[in-house]
Length: 585
Ligand code: DGT
Ligand code: CA
Ligand code: CA
Ligand code: ZN
Image (cartoon, rainbow, N blue to C red; front, side, top):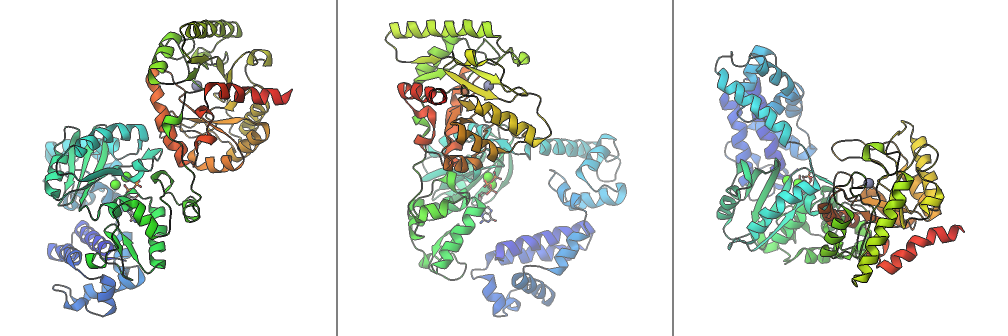
């Protein structure tokens, strides 16, 4: 345990004692000790090992014993007991703005409140206002604080985090005292859902940068602001951290704060194996924890850090301890897909079913965007809530698409709309007959309704759809809506196996609520030779932007250009679309 971790526990002890109503001198002693620890400039382990804790001002015998126990065993009995006797809800209440340990103690003693939910109920019943030292104003403030936390403390879709982060990153980049800057954390790793946003800046003037950051118009609340770090809430209710470091520390801090935690652990181990020490401040020629710049192994970039640890550069999306170390050691990391390699989307809707754009609008928009093709796959008849098409309507749509393509050809444009359907997977078949499916360029089969609570039932329905020679790909195979709806029960590995056997592709639905199939399964699919199609499932033209997000998730799944069907130019795509059907004849 390093001194930061020990300091954190000492601070928590102070708070726990305050909650118990201990005398303020005792509680303050712990906070002071924590502060002293943080200013030490040699490793705590060393001081403990050499029995020199007593030399530190203000460290009495009892405290020395406790710290020694913690550093040597990783536990402190006193702390564990203190924690066990405190209801966890009390600590949670401290996170509500305006609620400190003293108030929590009164709430607990006078009203028996042990959780945030109980506190909210008491506020709503007007009981909190009646307590001495509280009043109407405080009660309202607590209520607002709880509501605020409910909205803001949660996790967020990647798309929302990117939209909130990019303008701030641009503004930081434009500041004359910013040397380098980047996002870090889960956002930089293109994680499907992010907790908070992390920014990193290198500069010689940290306080000016932090001041600039917290006064951005996108910042709606400043949670904390120190000398090198600030935490704020930005538009949309997302929490964001900014850390400012020196330019020499920047690559190390960037690697550290990009994470993931699991990836960092292996990186640290690799450093230790080489007699080095890696932390957020640098890579040091030392066996012990240090930030002594005389011991620094200088690295100008993240690439150099990886190099020093005998690794090829690992792109941020792969930093999940998901096999990246073996591959990077052997020089076998794939060259990941770039989103600009995508040429169109093969699952999209129009005003013919539940989409918002007409065929003509779609054509104009996608040509403008630089796409080569765009498939129209409106819903099939069983999806009546989504205005699914009856066979006769679908045949009309095929004619309409062909007419548009004819006029594109006449104008000398190479862009093409593709005919298609997102056909419902029913109990024992798909929604349209084979002869109708055979008339379509693209067939996506998706499960939309009537899921079973039985995993085998759902899995078999999807496998049967894959066995249909006219079905090119399975759409959003788990039906999950991130942060909203759990996936239906399904055996994804069995589905991948069936797709491998039948030559069926699997969609990576790029809608940020779906990102379905999940990135964790693509390495397996790839090993089975199953191809991916990155689809917007667009219901509006702006949804074409999902291609970039989907590519980020595909990168996280180790996918390359060759693994993704919609990187193919039109003639090759048409050939690939005929392949499964031809091989069945
Ligand atoms: P999030 O925010 O929950 O979506 O996930 P991250 O990965 O952005 O996590 P966050 O914001 O708590 O911290 C950013 C990075 O900092 C994290 O990916 C790795 C690094 N980090 C933070 N705390 C620790 C730690 O206790 N140990 C190690 N090894 N790394 C840490
Ligand atoms: Ca984060
Ligand atoms: Ca963070
Ligand atoms: Zn769809």
